[in-house]
Image 1 (cartoon, rainbow, N blue to C red):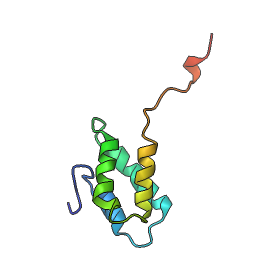
Image 2: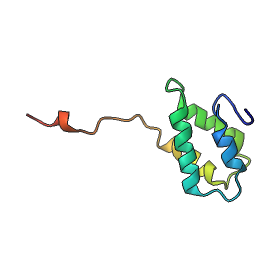
Image 3: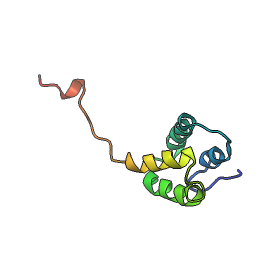
Image 4: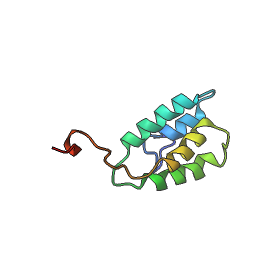
Length: 89
C-alpha cells in the first residue's frame, strides 16, 4: 500500500498529510483510527516519534503534526480511576 510503513501499515498518517485543508478534528479522528488499528505490543510512543521524523519535520504547521505531538504528551500509562468494584462495601 502506498505510504505504508511499519509505524503506519494502513497509510492513514501518510494520507492525512496529503489532504488539503484537513482540520484538527479530522486529524484527531484519523489518529484515533490509527491508534486503534495498531498492534498493542508495539511501542506507540516510539511509532509516533518516528512518524514525526518522517512527516512532521517537513510539515511543522500541519494539524496532524500537532496531533502527533499531543499523542506523545498523552501517552502516559492508563490507570484505574474507580468504578463500581472500587467502592467500599
